[in-house]
Structure formats: structure tokens, C-alpha cells
Amino acid sequence: MLNIRIKVFISAIVCVMLVNSAKSQVDSVVKTSTAPFMVTPINWNHLKKNAPRGKLANTVKTILLNANKFALTTWYHNVKKYQVDSTGYLDLKSKSKINEYRYRFPAAMSFGIAIAIKTGIYNPSITGISLKEAKDKAILMLRSVAYDHKVNDTRKVWGGDWQAAHWAYYAGYAGWLFWNDISAKDQAYLVKMIVAEADRFLSLAPPYYKDSKGKVLFPGDSKIEEDAWNAELLYLAAVMLPNHPHANNWSYKAVEYLIAATSLPSDLNNARMIHGRPVSSWVNGYNLEEPGFVINHGIIHPMYNALASMINAPIVFSLAGKATPEAARFNLDKIYYSITSHQFLDPPYKAPGGTMYRAGTAEVYYPEGSDWGMGVYDTYANLDIAAFTYGWDNRAKKHKGNYWAKLHAAKVLDQQKRFADRHTYANDNENSYPGKEEAIATRMGSAWMTIWLQHQIPAVYDNNPFQNSLQLDMLQ
Image (cartoon, rainbow, N blue to C red; front, side, top):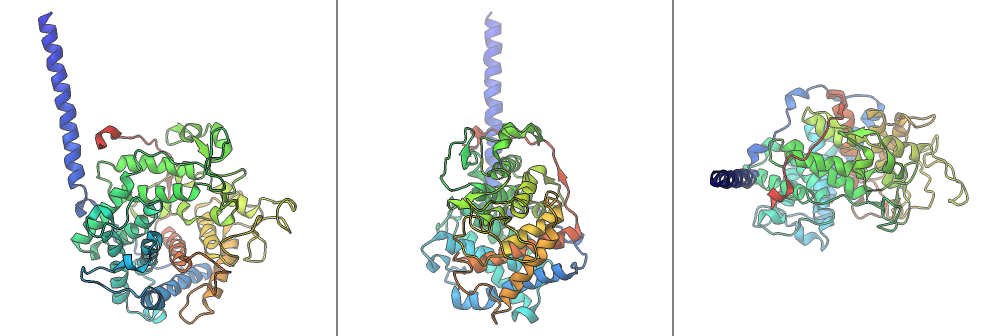
């Protein structure tokens, strides 16, 4: 009996030692995990084909270069009046009292410039700025965004904000594109920023507009956008840092947030298997209304059907030579059907009723109005390009994504042609969002990257199971 007790006691000690050893190893890896060498850079040698041609490709390319021109000239010098301070970074904090405006906007502009440069289309004869100056400004903006993140113990201005994952995604993505041109110190700042923002979602469940009983949790405010941009940051972290001890958990959480973002009431009983589990077991509510439209700002809001954050996954995964998770296109065909083909009756909706997209015109019908303005077309062009590129325009009736993309992209280019510095919007009636010009850089950057990368390496999807590999209690 005594021998048995001794064996049990020894076994218990061994178990404790093993657990502590495992935790110690994880802690050790976590402490050193921000080292820049952990990032897997993009292999540009596999992306050497000439830029695609054709009317739509040329239109999108020109729009992006026009956005670069504005960013590097009027916007940088006259709107933002950026200056390097004694730290060697831009003093972003002084440019606004709102972190979204301080950090989202330069991250967005650096994103658009980085894409143009790294895909080989940047053209100084259009922008009026040399390639070197454009690259230097883009890198200065993105590294200044990372420098101010709280995790880096510098100015400690932002981090953990409601939109913070969104800003970290744009700055981190642009940094990944420019990785070999960035100093080791700034690489470390970028990685720490990405890891800090990704880690905070590991213990958080994605929010829903309505719960599983149909109770409204956030009146008039679908959580599609924040679930989508949080997922973006999670899968970017996993792809950039595949050897990080949290990489599998980030991937798992990205899937959870992607499915939640575009969940419908019918998905509460959806038996379709995605990544090893039925859809119904992934969701705890829903963020879309049948057949696939979005309620946001208290109205049916077509602009939130066309969120860029929902459609960037194939780009990030393809840049790394990886298959895109099936969750990244979950219900996107239904969202596109809702915006192209679903009929809204008049009444109860605004006259004249009908579909959001109208054949023969770039104009969009807003069933309950629009609080952002009536002159936004870039977000739809981006959606259309992704829809026909990846094939989830299959439910659209009569006209597919390519048809609509040409209409919407041409309209954006016409808007830019009105102004010598090639900004897009004339006033708040067209688009009232304070970051409307910066949004052009992100949406058209994504649209161009969709076209360019599909020409290089066509996206593929997989539906492999995902599992959490690290117990959350070991993160404490």
C-alpha cells in the first residue's frame, strides 16, 4: 500500500514538473516570439509575371496610382502636414484627438502605396513623386503607427481600441510587403504590435447583432465589420508568424470570427461541415438578415454588404503560398446575391424599390437611405472584383461581378479626373466619412491586389479542420 502511495506521489510530481516545463517552454517562446526572424517574408521570386492588362485592370491600376498621388502630395504635406520629430518618427498623436484618425489613416495610405510599389505598377510620372521617396514615406508612416502602440513602450497612445485590429492589419500588411526594407528595430515594433492585437482575441468570442433566439444585442448595429476586421488581423498574424506558439490559435479564432461575421439566421441549424464542424456549432447568433443583407446605422446598409475586410483573405494566404480557409468565403455568395438580385418592395422601402444594383448604371439604390453619402462607388468595385475573381457571384442573376465592376470602377476614375491632385470626393454629400480618401487607398489597393495576385497565383481554398493547440490557461 505504501509503495502504491509513493508511486502515485511520484507520478503527481512528474506530472506537475511536465506541466511546469511545458508552460516554461511556452513562456520562453512567447518572450522571444517578437524577434523579427520569426516572420516568414513573402517570396517575391514566385510573383514575377507582368501586371495583367485589360480595361478593368487598367482602370483599377490608374485609380490606385491616383490615390497614391494624392497621398504623397496634397494629403501628406497639406492635409496632414506630417513632420518627423526628435524620435525619428512622425508625431501622429498631434494630428487628432481620435485614435482612429491618428492611426487608421496613415496605415491606410501606406497600404495603398506599398501595394503599388511591390506589384511593380508604381509610376512617378503619374504621382509626381520618385519611387524612393514614395517608399520612404510609406515605410515612415507604417513604422510610426507601430511605434506608438502601447506594447512597444514608446508613446503608448493606442492599442486594444475597438478598431485597433483594423489599423494593425493595414500597417502590418504594408510592413510585410516591405519587410526587407525595414530596420530590425521597426520590424520588432511591427511584430509586437501584431502579436499584441491578435492575442487579445484568443479569449474573446465574436459578437453578434442578434443572439440565437433572435434577440437584438446591438440595436441597428450588425457586428459584421468588426468581426471581419478582427479576423483579418488574426489570419495575418498566423500567416506572417507561422512558427509562433499562438499561430494555430490565431487561425482557429480567425475562422470563428469569419463565420460569425457573415452568419445568417438559417445558419443556426446549418449542418454543412466547415473546418471539421457543422456551421451550427460555430455560431451563437447572426449578423446578417435573410437572404444576406446588413443592418447597420439602424438601416439596411448596402455599403456594409461591400466591406473590404470580408474579402482580403485569399490575398494574404496566396501571398504566403497557402490555401485560403473555406470560412473566408462563407456566405459571401449570399451577400452578393442580396446586393445584385434581391428585390426590395416599394413600400415599405424607398421608391422606386427594386435591386440595390441597377443595370446600365453605377448608381446604387439604398432601400432605407444612406448616412455616408450617395457618391461612394469604390467599395462596390472592390466587392465586384472579388466576387467574379473567386466565383462567389454565382447566385447573381443576369449580370455577374465583372459587369458591375466595370461600371463602378469607371465611376471612381471619373470622380478622380475632376481634380488635379486626383483626390476622389468633392464634398461630404458624396461621402461624409472623414477618412474617405484613405478608404480609396485601401479598397482600390485590395482590388488591384486581387486582380494582380490572381494573375500570379490563383487562389485555392481548403476545408481542413482547425483545432486550438494551446490551452488558454497557459497564456496567463
